[in-house]
Image (cartoon, rainbow, N blue to C red; front, side, top):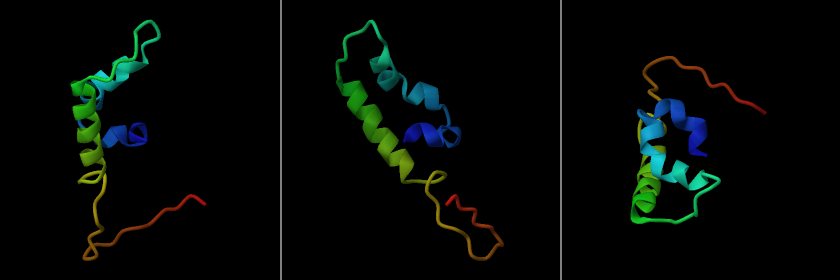
Length: 67
């Protein structure tokens, strides 16, 4: 899910490096403390600005939906 928002997270590839390394085909999958810390940091990033932000009703904005 975070890949969808990666354009809004500064340094996304560096932030997620420990988790991305888990996807290497020739390496054993080992969840270490750094992976857990990265996972928790990503969860916080998903619920804070600029990913999640309330609209400013004082300025005009448009809502686009995909349905």
